[in-house]
Image (cartoon, rainbow, N blue to C red; front, side, top):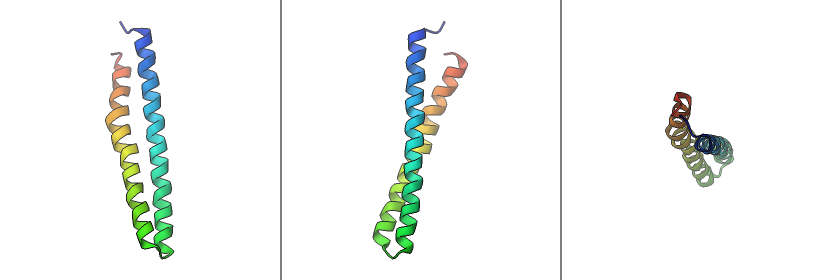
Length: 81
């Protein structure tokens, strides 16, 4: 039997992780676009930094929060545990 307050907490945590993953992914895409436009505009150092930070943000959003945190929690909730 699933405890209702515990299930509510689990859903709130899952929602926070999904929102965080989405925000990090959006920030990563924006940083990538900015980095590419800075590099094509001649500022290679700023462009390289922004591209590196964009890749890091995409990793955090997709892998660290999405694949490693959200997917297992979603599977656990779907299984009723």
